[in-house]
Image 1 (tube, rainbow, N blue to C red):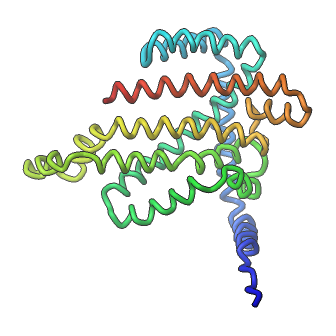
Image 2 (tube, rainbow, N blue to C red; image 1 turned 135 degrees about the horizontal axis):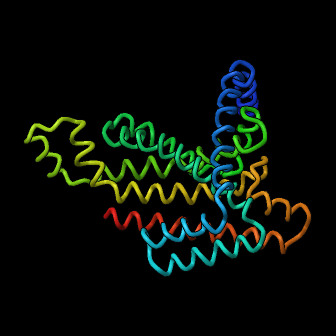
Image 3 (tube, rainbow, N blue to C red; image 1 turned 180 degrees about the vertical axis):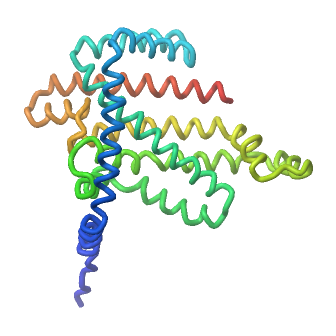
Length: 276
């Protein structure tokens, strides 16, 4: 007995065709708005002279982290500048900043809702499991029909890929707060808003910062992969090296990605430790 194949692929194709046909005006408006924002941030960062921007990052690393990380930040960014990868690094940094901002902006409220409402948590967690187990390359497929090739599609896929840790760890941080604190707040007549902003979020901030740290790391990895749909940046350099069979150029771009990942990871990790 041959069981007929479920037409899942046809259903997905029809859904994407329907949405792109009937809601193209929305996606085009979002694409234009996001393109303006991305270009503005990138132009601003490119306007700052590289030595000045390097000093800013070194100061952030010195303040939030350790002297060793500050020295590594200085040497690493100078090394990237020396390799001629500074413009590509700025594009990558821009995409990571914007994607992380949108992911946290959407993810934190959803995490709070999941923590405070069991019904929302039962719906949210399976969706997050699905999002985190889906291969990263699959997220590139629906972005092209909606937003076309380029940085907007890259931000869209990066947000979808990197948002789950922000939701999950915000929910976890609020759930881990000892019930004695909530009972004490209730005994003093605190409202839900007062408990959230004066007790739950401050106490959950270390866990929330861990989620933001993971969001940044996932965003950086996805931005590199999104070079396949025209994101550019360091991922574009890697992709170009693969197409041209130039392992040296690919290795240089890969080292630059590693340096940026270490800098962002160490700075955000120490911000989390300070919040603890």
